[in-house]
Image (cartoon, rainbow, N blue to C red):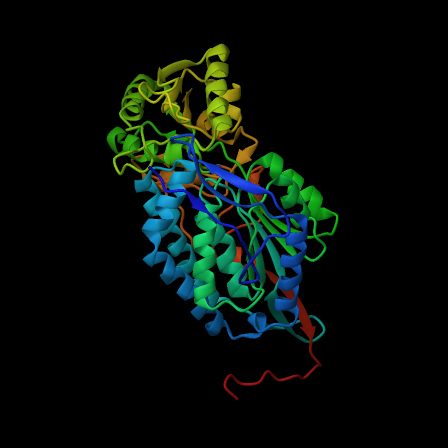
Length: 490
């Protein structure tokens, strides 16, 4: 039985502080449907307090004025502490959102370490100052920290997404107010302990679990300079609308309906082995999940049989069991959402090839079988709308031009993949698909390159130098004619 975890304070500006409100958030296990923890629900007054200390830390404190290497030293200590506590972090997240523990170890704990490490590599090589010859004379271009950042993160991969925002923000010299989802706030308390022990100066980091109303208040706060948000398209639109009132800068990492395209020359064993974990990763609760699989009509039956067999063989059960490959969905509403879409798919004429209901023997917990629909047309709702559950569509296509058209026929453009016997041809295919990331004969996310989406999948980029740039302002300093740049080290 999972131990009840209860917290009574909020982490504001690096200190454990009594909340100014009285509301609490109860965390419910998606496996047992029992309460496993509680934390204070941050109030608008708590937001005001966090923004005030963050503003002071940025405007007057040492953090943005430290050398880059001094900030790197603190961020490195955060990364190293995550390594020490990675099993605790993985178990905490799996108990809250249902991620299989074996997947959590990699994506929920070790993944954030990789994010911090990559961000440090990028920060060291980044050109913070650059002399140029302008039209009217020499100029100096500087990149300076953006200021106070509101980072709003989701429940599905909370520490990975937190790292994607915290690492570049902290390395830039900015202060951060992190707003975890009410479904998965417990792991943020581990992060708070880590950040405090790492030596972040006063005011630089606050962590405020809260619901949508308080999140809107934070996003619209005039003391915030930038909002970094990951979540649904609907929520992203609302974030942009609220932030626009203050012309606050935003980056939005939103939804996806990514296509995995199997070309006729693909090796099917390798392809299926790559697509299954990419399609049903994190119980289907991943924005980059490959939830539309495109198969050539010439091999459609072969693909359908192999993919259905592989999906049907996934081990479903207790997320804390190391053998589990597919756990419960995070909440009853998410379970019902998937079941509703399964019904809609059948009504639209698609055929269930495997799954389609609750797993036998798992009447308790918010479980849905790994489900594969066949005979899907790309105009169906199940092919166009993000389900965010273990439901995947198999779509037939004729020639390659039709495969490209179907892959691009979506309001989303976040990820995708192509599977082929000719890698160079796969790269040519990738160039035609309008998504922010794409894979050839693999599925991964490299933290040294830019990650983000086209169309409704988002605004801006995370990771790589492009991601660090989102936390920097660009300043141009005009210099007099004849100015000679000082030699390095002079």
